[in-house]
Amino acid sequence: MTGQVSATGLGDWPGTDPLEAARAIRGELGSPHLPFLAELPDRGVGSDPVGRTASLLVDLHADVQPHGWRVVDRPGRDAVHAASALATDLNVLADVVGAEDVHAEQLQVRILGPLSLMAGLYLHNGERVLADVGARRDIAQSLAAGVGQFLERVRSAVPGAKLTVQLAEPEAARVLAGLLPTASGYRTLRSVPRSEAHTAWSTLAEALRVAGADEVIVSAEAWEAPIAGILEAGANGVALPFEGLTVPQWEQLAGAVEAGARVWLGAMPLDASPKTRTGEVAERILRPWRQLGLPLSALEAVRLTPAGSLASLSPERATAALTRLVKLTDAVNQLALG
Picture 1 (cartoon, rainbow, N blue to C red):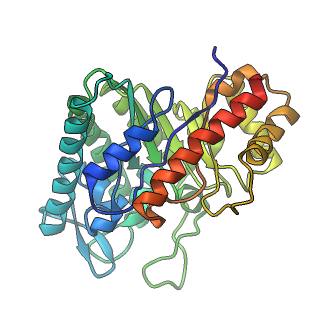
Picture 2 (cartoon, rainbow, N blue to C red):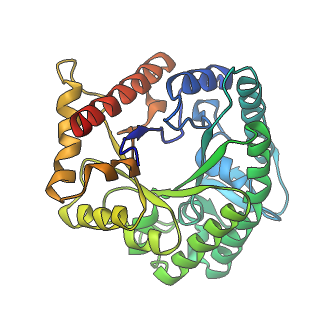
Picture 3 (cartoon, rainbow, N blue to C red):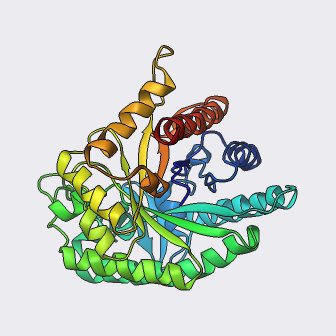
């Protein structure tokens, strides 16, 4: 084991130019870091997380209605935009990778996890998919069926690269706690049983592995993050914001690392004061690691990510943020390993 922390991003990127994004990301995140396929939400409908992931569904379609993405009988203009944008991103990535002198070793791609996709899609009656147990089952099965073709296209763009799939579950805790509002806003939807969430995650993780994914990481918000449930469902690791993690959550993460899981920490602040030293941030990252008694060699399990959305920045500032992120990993490694 090298015992070295590495860096990656969470997927989003500012602007509308996939070529500029791919060049910037791959230029900053060389080995041993993990470059990612950029998502460009500034392009509008179809480049948002729900539309992008909905375009992967098999035998189900979604189109934008006044209240959001709605499940429909046949693909409309918005679904075509989503599929076209993703195809463009993959074609551009293939061109950039093909022009590189060094073989592409690894790549990360992000899609919405099943719970958050169910939270972001609506039925014909205007209610969230979450409200209907049959619709939830259909979405989970359709997404699992669709990721194979998606990863086949990704592998064609980066031949031979190891693939990490990030399942973004920003709504997981609220879905499991029954905190999302109904369409009327006067009440909340019933919580999804944890057993159902486990089945959805495990089915999707297995489908991704069959399709060639080397790792499956589930990202979530720190509040009530279902860390144990995610790992029990077969994910290789979790991605969480560094700030806001509780002592019990750190203890769960320590146990996960000891069991061989990966941990991604959103630790690099995007709004840090110019006076904030990289070494100070690095020391804050290492402090809970030492307090938990974890061996420094196990830092190999950790990837650092930005603490916020890069899409909120300009392309130039986003590139600079990745530069700082790599410097932060260097600082952590120097402090930990000398």
